[in-house]
Image (cartoon, rainbow, N blue to C red; front, side, top):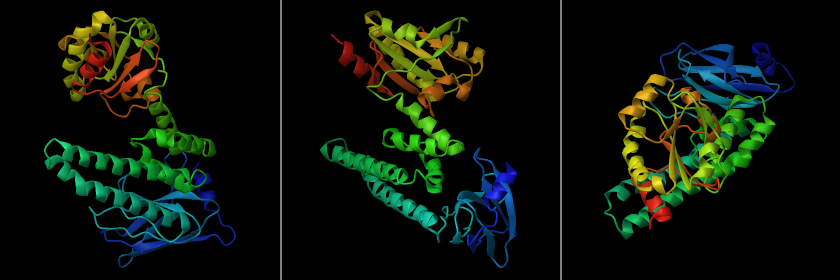
Length: 358
């Protein structure tokens, strides 16, 4: 695999690449490495820093992503798209904003992308303080709506930008920004296309699978089944429960998750009010220690159903539903259609009063 990365930079006609810039750190050299498809890398060169400057020259046969390491840590690097031409990447002082490479078409696009995103963030930051300082009322709601518009416009811009780069390394470069992207519906088709175009690339596969999972939790979609063990040692599937209840609330939680445990009284209140009318709860635990899981169930007086595969963040639930943070919840109707997700506080009670209240 190391050889393949080196061959990626093998000599070829008129494909010279130069990366140079200033270095505002107390280091005597930088390391240039080629990123591999499994998100690892292989060292290509150790480049001396002289009088606060460095230059690296080579040739490139096909586009890839390079890491320019400025420290000893495995996270002390900046990324560059490796394409023919003269690329500038300045290494700033510790604590300063991440620099972006310029000088070739794809690298210039990185800068344009981040500059545009920064403009959206400036608009957001200019309003958010006023929003929190404004008393509840029409003005507060108006500012909130404006913030929502800015956020959605930014998400749409990012999605549209990514969609234009499903066939080049800029799409792969950008995917790291989409791990925690809040509008997966905007990029569902794009990430699917990137995975098809780059089936062996770590980020293309990882983000596409994550987005696919997140879309499985979207309202109006059919739920996806899960089967795990119960605290009593048996097995339980969502498909055992959902068809037999008017509404099923699926609570993805863990004994070690403080915010998850803080929500238990809210769930318990709804359970006590509506369980006899066809409301069921299934806790899906992200625990890895069986004893901790069972102790939490007893400590919080949880009476509803529970299941877990005791694999922590490696659990099947995280993969199936693209879950990157808990608590996470789903409300599912008897027909198997997801009604809504991510309930907090009294939101679940309000929803169930609407659906089942008499």
